[in-house]
Image (cartoon, rainbow, N blue to C red; front, side, top):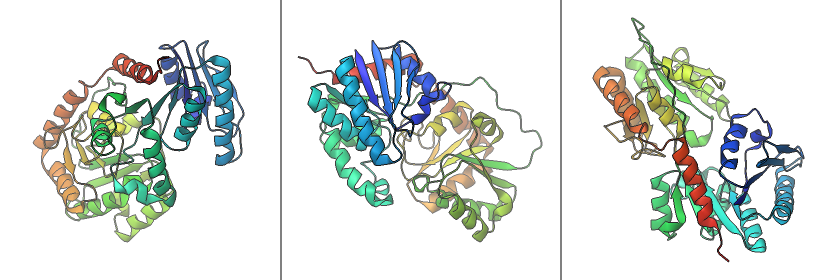
Length: 368
């Protein structure tokens, strides 16, 4: 089977990147695996005799998308691809749909984020409002669909009336680590941790407001925000307005994330929507108790009151209450952490995830 992936991730054009190394595993499943990604560089990179990455070229988004179409069309003609897989159901999804119809080959659409069931995503930008309807149009016409959670699958089946047998659930694989959580000793600080992009999706203003309430009573509490993004200035101004500057620290993104998981006392996710939420799995792997909103893997990988404390989206009172419970109840922290650790270790391993990827592509094959 020969698969063409229309990606959004140009980092794979660096052969030493994490993404490029992961792509090699996909190539081992197939006869050939081609990827076209948006990039200012018109670049071709052969990662192996099976895997080729192509940068689109183009100085702006529109030009890059046009070049993705042209390059993909050429690859399909020359390499006789069997399936197109697209990283989202929007712009590259539309390119995939047009090419799949033109060449009469299968279309596999990936939905990594929970774009359709929540109002928050489509209200963030006017462009998202139009993407919402474009995405529904495209995803209904895919031969197979890869989603990352049961929650997303349920919505597609129950609300968009997509046939259940077209959808494959492939959770995001997270590599286990062997590091042990260090003993806290006599350290008095209690560290809440959040890692990720500083964007509207993550609803970090909600987290700052909840932490400000916590800080009034628990002066030893600290909030560590690790990441970068367009909302950083707004969040830092909010930190000043809430008078919690000494207790809230911003750090730039780092690849050594597990150092922070192991130093923290609890992980807090305040997002309005997530596809899966890799950070929750990473926290659980390090036996870090989790407090989160009802998004992504909530109710699947982790269960409320059993392996995490889960509150409804944008619920300040409940998020504050859950953070308070965790900081004040050591036995609760230990129970949540141990149960989450045991739960995530039952998730599919790397080979099972790869097998599911292959199954999603095979499901898209058009039988002549």
